[in-house]
Length: 64
Image (tube, rainbow, N blue to C red; front, top):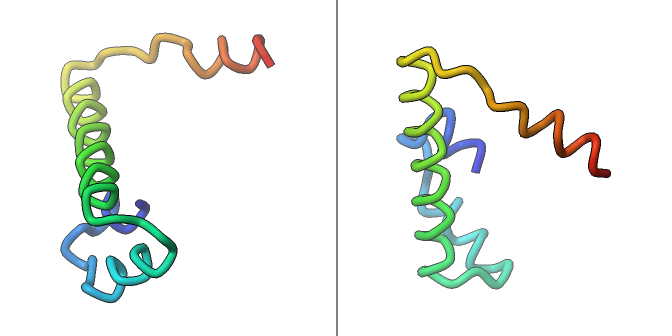
């Protein structure tokens, strides 16, 4: 989903077709795009408001 995050306008039919060839259904592809877009949106909003990270990455490292 890197391409969707960094340059969604560069996503091609061939990109989608590759996912289908790996067994993804159209609803699964759509959901992956929606989730990627939502994360990008939330990250941009948090950055715009200066919301500091909550330490989830650090907590995850401790629990492993």
